[in-house]
Image (cartoon, rainbow, N blue to C red; front, side):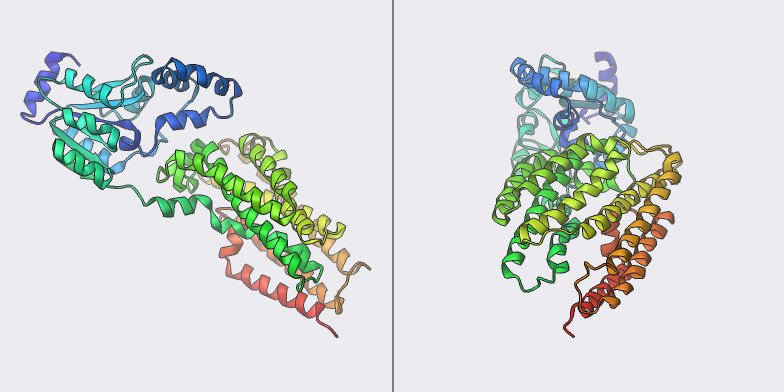
Length: 483
């Protein structure tokens, strides 16, 4: 907009100065530099170029990253209360400016989506518009009218000192006090969730139930009184919990766009913007090192290394390959089982390996089928960042149900084999229909659209599954009890 039009706009609202709005951590609950860095993290050529771009200047780094990372402005986590405030100001005739340190191409994409701003002032590949630099640019641009500024952290203090008014967005109490001493506060908007609950949610402790698989070799070997075995298994359980949480963070960071497009996963902390991306980047190495230490104490370091490698490969690439992703998911379950046997000293039998292979494959297929059914319900054709389309549903269901019945068949053959070591082996036949019932129930829940997450997570919330588990333990206890 020309200077003449700007004068007319400011006259229309009399003494209300133009409102300049920051993008990162203000208009959106995330940081575009971090978003673009994570978006290109899987590209080794780009990663190798980062030091050279950074040496040329942060504005150059932002420009090069913006060119290579395709951020969808429609999926960014916008600050809805601030958007409502801006729309009211816009309706009253106020002149709005998007003033951001992000690259101009990203700012223009946001403006194209929102259609709110009259002007864009942003980094341009030469000048990084942050802190004092932004303050100087805005003071020069609006030296006659003055300006109001909406920001969020201490880097905005030099700008507020040059402004005539301030809009404080999710500022800390310390920054808010400093801003209030420098400028008249027009409005305060606090929408940020507490970090600790968001962090705990991102770690997904409810998923740790999968790691109970490390105790199965001890239980099936009737070694409940082996204190050394239980100590090693408990250490390994803790190691799997910490590495799993770290890898969930990696998965969520690498899957931001897909999660934001998902009806349920969009509420995950990183996708929603309730947890800063940099927090995840910092937590991952801490959790991995802690896990390695625990695994070393348990005597099964190899299992954690193998699990971490396979899971990382799955997050960045293998989940996009049909069938390979299913075998990888099943393999991640099996690694836990094998590791538990190695740590406790009770190695997995071929019978348990055969049963678990088909059983875990069935669970992996359930996960994919539930995702595809959700896509079908939204009249879409494919799951973002997955290799399956809705037309694959039938064949996947056939594979999954077949794996279910084969796993139960293996269990039935084991129960009547000479390898059985229970005092009352006949009672174990009750496990066969019980396992068939439970797995078929999972498939019914999936077919009816009730499987919104991982089948293990569904089981943890399902009272019938809990009842089935209690009955299973009771049968095993009676079958193993002395005559």
